[in-house]
Image (spheres, rainbow, N blue to C red):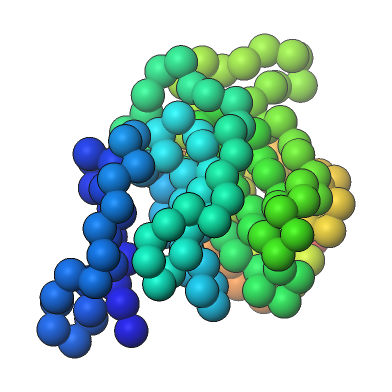
Length: 193
């Protein structure tokens, strides 16, 4: 029943969706730079320093938070969060390229995958990623290094392709469509890339 909003000053707000009245406002000191996900009584988001928060939907108080790898350069791009309520798992990619799977009920880390390193062992510099797409036990994400199909249960990369985009991939039953920064369109088989 509430609309959850963040701003570039570090505030998080809950507004009544019917009237627009303020329910609560909290300042966390650092701007939030992620999509906002809600599930049951929780709000999930990351700030621009890659600090992850689980916040109580009723009063805006932090239930838990933890630091990930901080970014030296602050990006204007939003980081992506995906929620799997069936597995109590949350998936997110930080602005430094670490892909996390966290069980939000137990606050345990399921797995961690570094997507910022190329096969040659080089970091591409400024990191970006597309929104995460979750289909059953597969996660699809594209970033400044390439495009990946990842098993959501264990973080294993099923396939990767050196084709980067920040645009959300489009999935059909059998295919995944990607658009590059230069406007090229690529059609891939979802099973094997």
